[in-house]
Image (cartoon, rainbow, N blue to C red; front, side, top):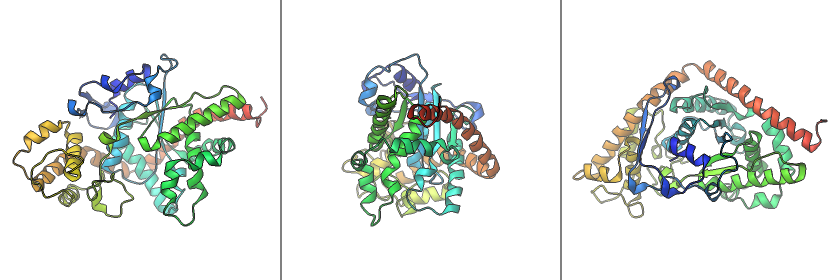
Length: 394
């Protein structure tokens, strides 16, 4: 995870994972409508985040305010993996005082077929989920991608600077297209739109998982190509890469895979909107093994280790503390213990989510306000691009 205070320092001066701080707490502003949340981890997981190579060098101007951009597809209600893997990190970034821009990337979602009514509902639900988790629209720019037309316009310019060979080597395209008989063009070129998303706001840093790192490298490559061809315009964005072994919550039914909404079995994931009874039932069905004792061994006991990781994340206890407290507790009993801890952690988020979803007009208004803020930034960049490319007379 990226603790807010440490991240602020990291963004000013590059550091090493070994310099990570000890456990700390994070309090959200009273105006955010999100409860105070304590975050702590033990020294056994002191490599909480792994800065990529670019962050091991000094940022060019440590006195310049950083711009942090990240996006999420509108899949509806978040699950526990989304929450710990991305959104909680966004909330921490919000606390750094840097400029933070969070985008619901609905244009990316239609690279594969979507039902129009369902998609619109999922966009609104995603907005509600982000706010319920602690994203404060008064402190961060939160908006829907398609409400800012400059994304699609700038995408075309960058597409004209990209080669097919470069896109064909990106791993996610290979993975997603492997099971398709007919491959949509959007699935092939969406990393260019992702680059447009980032560069449109002149983002300096992008928090991503390891599987998205090459896409950020593509954005930096296109920024460099544009600068060389048309003159200095963009900074080269850098990825904030976290340690996936810490951040990834695994499936409750297939603990060798990450928790995902694409998995057909709904018992594989904990949704933030799940009722206490639903959460208990899902944990009861969680796959473990035939060993009764509770101890962490990710390689040989992925199911129990996943439960312990979730337990640690929602309580802030170390693995040693959890193991000591669970001496004499069998795995069936431990599943219920973890379920209760998750229920308690998610309770204020679920209540806030229900409140927000009861007023969808308000959520639409928040997205309108966010789009206005985003467009103020994006339109300036797009005008600069048009002038540099020759589409607009200076």
